[in-house]
Image (cartoon, rainbow, N blue to C red):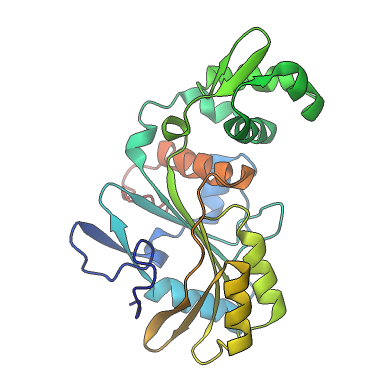
Length: 273
């Protein structure tokens, strides 16, 4: 249970009205099944036994998220991203936004995701400019994006459709864990901010030393401690809008694909077992 309300939109105390409590471990994505069914570059690094892995496992088992009504939770453990393997990424998303999404999204490739993120930032964009940024396979990418109803295309330009219709993720919370506060931990948590709405460094109780907390505040990342009394927010992360990057879109597509390929009998809360 969280012992502070410094950031109530994320660390809401369990028992809050209108919210459903979900333990993070219960929302953990099963790597093998997800990789087989989802594609789009989804893969995981295997867990390495040791004190840091034990800290992560204790955190996942004890961490309760008071999920907003209508939202779902999926938790990724060490997913592969261009910047490395973040220890934990918790994805809160709204399934109702995806109900009209085209099945053609299943055909999207990595470059297509990069293009839709660029168009989301740029608005109407000349095709001649895009061809300079994406010199290989642009036409095929635009065709897939148009079939997937993610872009509007004209003769010489195109734009992304409104993000509230194409992006279902509400929060992307990354957590990087170490058994002691150190520069490397803060660097990794800061790297995770490129795709996250909130990025945290996690250490055991009593290890959040003053210099690390001050540095975390300056970097815009949060600091968590975990021990017998649960999780404490030492300092909250700066809140960022998502999609923040290409990787934000990857998580968006992954959770949607997992839902569409969900096996009979699986729970409906975003969990892939």
